[in-house]
Length: 174
Ligand SMILES: [Cu+2]
Image 1: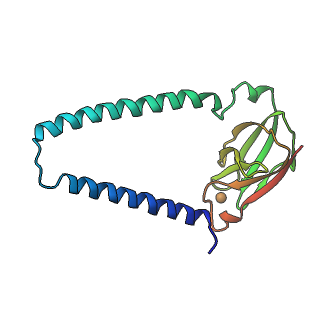
Image 2: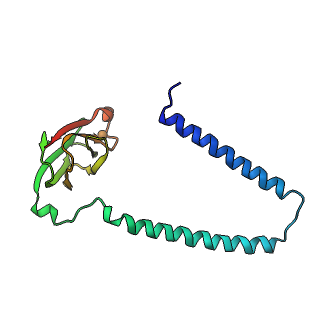
């Protein structure tokens, strides 16, 4: 049997579940027969809850601040100074330029002709580099700078009909 990512996840889940069950059994056996005052448990529980809440809040705030510089939406001013390229989504294709420039701030002007679609752009390594909704009668601007040359893939990110899964396009960045 081949070790797929799904099997790895399943294996990790089984191990963690076994550890959790053992921990619960240990607590159950250790507590067997002894009684503790409700007020004592409540006081300790509330204290633990306070510490837990402040800890989680601190982690969330620090994580938010650390990740802020990596926020994927570039400054609005890029829209005015950049080269614009039209992208049209329709059942079941994307109409867009076959070649886009490397290391250049560009804006994709995205619209749809029939129903809502999603435009998800994947770099040559399969990592998502941008995504925006394509809506009929409306143009969404997606500012981008492509840092890697090669073949990019566009996938529809919103279920749009019977052949949604076939809706993809490729373009070259150079
Ligand atoms: Cu779709």
